[in-house]
Image (cartoon, rainbow, N blue to C red):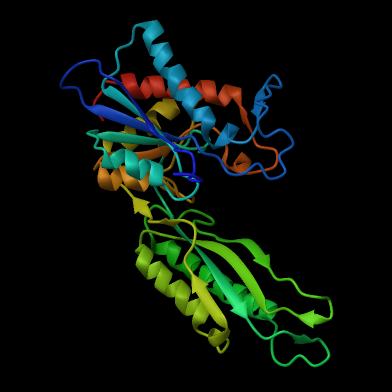
Length: 338
């Protein structure tokens, strides 16, 4: 159709070593967030220790990590303990429709490893997240005669109520398995606020965009209901419009003692001395889809540091990518019982 966006296909690759072997599927998203103010977003510059550019840490490095692991096993004559599948998916940053589409085409795998920038730590779950927009409206007026509250003040009041909701959810998080030991397992993110008027006039509209994480103790619908109550539960509700925009990701928690999580934690420790406590990740990703739709033991793991993701100086340490490849070789070739 004229004007339609270009297609963004997924890719699925398979390495079948023997019929009857179990299967491990790896999933990596190929989309990235906008470059923002990154000075060299598409350079891929290597400075001797790090590769720079948008998506270097989140999460193109993990495509390289997995392919290097597979290449090393081939060169060393190591036969994996399982057949290996790879999903290269789109749209993770915007909500996960790429992984959803890939899984709706069918997959049979006993283990799933969703590759994300976890600094080579292993997580068996992740928080959820919902995005929304609040629009406050009022009549324009002269600053000298304006009555009541500006729409900007209304949005600032919404922010305060959302901060209070975030604080309550953080208290509740102390009782949620997998998240109780994390310092900040969920977050309120304010991604935009906009209003515009002549300096001597009050604006007619102010828009606030935000997203808020939530834990597996709530469904997405329950989280949205509490957000709506916080946003619209004050005297200014008649001037506010709440719209659900952006991501709507469910939270997910798996079994910390399942074979996939235990095997990969052991591999990271044996190869790199990296200890991973049985915890969930304080970030949302595609792992929920593989756990629910594929029924696989699902973990989140990868090279790259979350502190680098989405930043104006995003980069990844090459040595960490190489170490991660070695961890995956151990993980895929380890035949000892758990």
